[in-house]
Image (tube, rainbow, N blue to C red; front, side):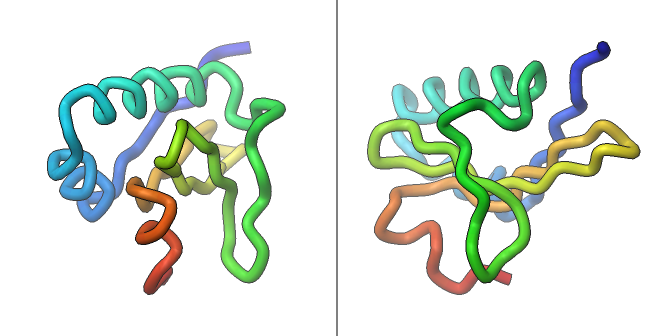
Length: 88
């Protein structure tokens, strides 16, 4: 079974670039893991919004999965206190 393609939204990319380098490195590693397994045991389905979230310490990756296109779209990255605000 081939890996999923990871697509990062412009907003998420901007959020990633604002993070400290060591945090960004951990999140990039987690995104790479998502390409192999889009629903790891630690992933939780979001309530009230489409998609899933993965925790990495105090940081979260919010994403959706398109099974037909085998694509993961990451639409938010950030600290847990900020990442859920103004989801759209």
